Image (cartoon, rainbow, N blue to C red):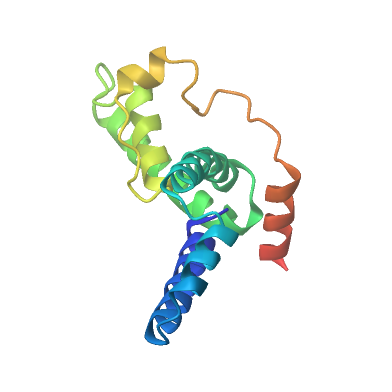
Length: 150
């Protein structure tokens, strides 16, 4: 579930709670909370699920979704040109390492949300980098992409 959908559900729940509170029907509030299982434990479990879903969605946006294809192409072209200029100006010692370039590129594609060190990108096999083989899209993400494209 995306954060947009969660926010919509939360807004709906808040407005429903406010309406019921104004009517002073506390029984309805309690029954509503019980009906949708709004407990602190359930909220924490949903947040953990959202972290997993968010990482899958980011990978989908970066590598597979055709909706982001133009943006990916523009950003990749900018970084390739910058790297060519730096290598041409200092052929003996380039100022950027490939891992640093990967980190900056992925951070740019994510809207500057990536805060990984270049050492972690090089050494950690679980960190997604441009050389690793992407995993398959789950059916829900594939449907999401197709619905966005149309």
